Length: 75
Length: 132
Image 1 (cartoon, one colour):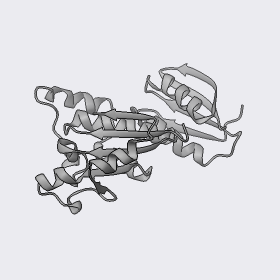
Image 2: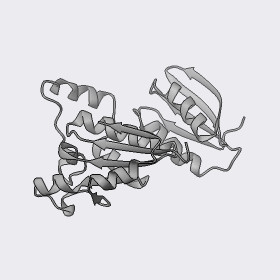
Image 3: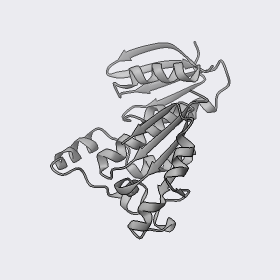
């Protein structure tokens, strides 16, 4: 699961992580994986919902030292 | 969310109202929805060229200022910029503008001016209609 790009959205509050992810994923090709780092706790549910509504797949998410990490595959 | 249309009425003008409107609008646009906002009465503050940069906190809620700074919430100016970038349709209410002696030039770039019927026409086939 090699990410093509990593987006640092740490320190950003809603709705900025989603807005930044939307921009970042536009530059990728279908099947590419985007890795996202965030600290907004709301990102957990928001990213899952966003991926679902956009036809992308949330492959994995982890939490290390207060940083949430997500891997989304572009649909 | 593509092929989803969201119609929003912004009828209030405090900082809280601005966040409610622009957070939902930009989140919807980031989810590929088509978004239009009709600004009426105090809601016009949210797109007023100068006014939107210094919206007041609701009376008695001034102490939340610190919370906004601490949580690193984007400024309304930033959110308006994002809304424009994402092609969110911003419609200012003609009647309110007339009552308040405001002209198109008093607002941020790229707005449209329309009456209630314009909004109804936009909203008639919307999947979600929200009022703030």
